[in-house]
Image 1 (cartoon, helix red, strand yellow):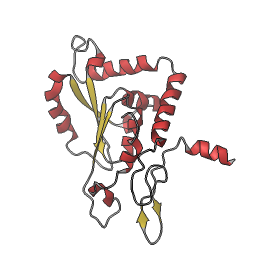
Image 2 (image 1 turned 135 degrees about the vertical axis):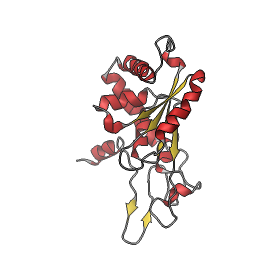
Image 3 (image 1 turned 30 degrees about the horizontal axis):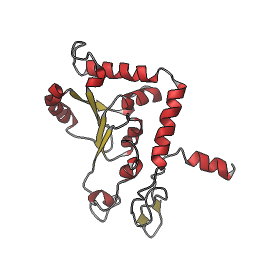
Image 4 (image 1 turned 90 degrees about the vertical axis):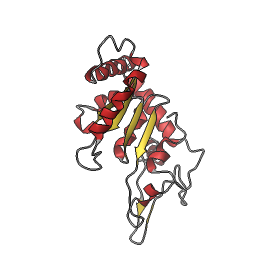
Length: 204
C-alpha cells in the first residue's frame, strides 16, 4: 500500500497500544502524548476520528436519530418507566454502567444501579450496558448513542464512548495497581490514562 493509503488507514484506527521492549515497558502514543507522558494539548486526532465516524453513520442511515430516540424510549421502558412518565425522552438522562463477564468485573454493579434509582425524580436512570450481549454492531452504536453518560472500570469497553452524543460524559474507574506492575499509571494524576488521551479535545 502507498504511504498515503497507510496514513489514511491509520487516521481511522485507535492507537492506544504501548511499545514494549525486552528491557523496559514504556507508554508511547505519538499522537497525543509525548515520550515523557505529557499530554499534547492541541491534539485533535481522536476528535477527528469521532466526528468522522458520526458523520459516516449519519450518511449511511438517514433515520439514525429516530432510531436512537426509539432505543432511548425502549431503554426507559425496560427500566420500569411508564409511557406517561416518558412523554419526552430528551428530558431524561440515561447513564450506562459498563458490565463485563470475565475481566475487570464491576462486582457491585447491581447495587450501583439500584442506588441510582434514588435520582428518578431528577429524571436520571442508570442501566447496565454490555457489548458482549449485543446482537450487532448497529445495536452497539444505538446503545451508546442513546446514553448521556458512560461509567466503567478502565478497559477497552470505554472506547465505545466515542459514540456518545455531544456533551456526553465518561467516567473511568481505575483499579489499584502496584507501582512495579504494568499499568502503574492508573495510580498517578501526573499523566492522562489512555482513555483520557482519547477524549481530550473532543466535545465529550
